[in-house]
Image 1 (cartoon, helix red, strand yellow):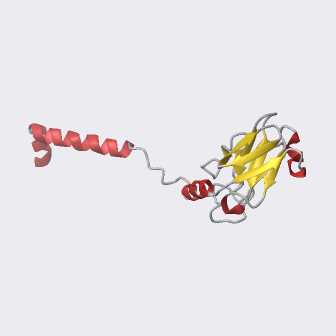
Image 2 (cartoon, rainbow, N blue to C red):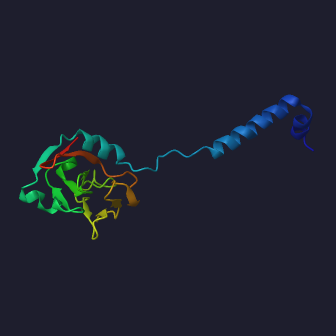
Image 3 (tube, rainbow, N blue to C red):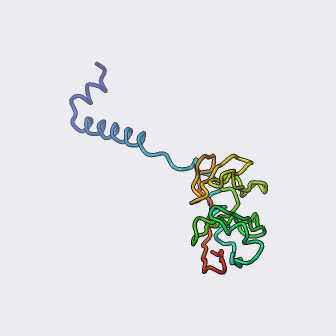
Length: 166
């Protein structure tokens, strides 16, 4: 046995120090990794989308509203939202509408073509650039690479007009 091992075996202080070193090493190795792998565009999308002033009204008798007359119907409103990529408006039921920014939360801040589009069946929307698929009922991610859900706007419906705002 070498001298350092003999010293550790006989010295209570050395044993305590060794134990502390082992515990701290285990603790550091088990520490949860930081979320540095999350989408680098998260702040870009949410800070910028939430700062866009959106206050848009559609009258129920207008031609623009026509696709929204049925549950599951949707429209795109161009020129609004983050980078003016537009807003997706979806009729969830007779009294409730949802509105999401069309900007893809994965690559939308750096790619002007990263815009979500409703998929066949009207239950999901997809960015054709990165392939991220979002649930149309709540904007959550069904498949990545996106790690942030779609930015959602507020809606109010009084039976005659639909207001989309933030």
